[in-house]
Length: 110
Image (cartoon, rainbow, N blue to C red):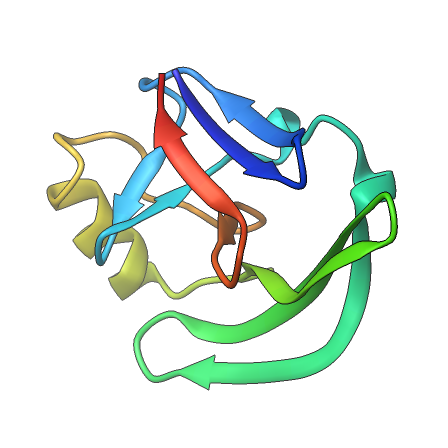
């Protein structure tokens, strides 16, 4: 199982079969988020040439914040789906809506 944790709270948890590994990052499916109350939409938006447009969220737990600590690609290209599938043992490579964490949010396998 993989978890994403911030300030003592588990923000996401998923079995290994549910996650996708992309460029060294664990991408969690939307159903793995324990509470959307921890995520506050950020104004930051970026674009990746092969993945597409990306939105960010701040993670807030008990007054502590991981600014832009979560990113998600709402819609990805067919090329990205194919590449991700090939690099994840043939799993469905559609990671639209999946969440990845950084900037103070710890991701670990337990």
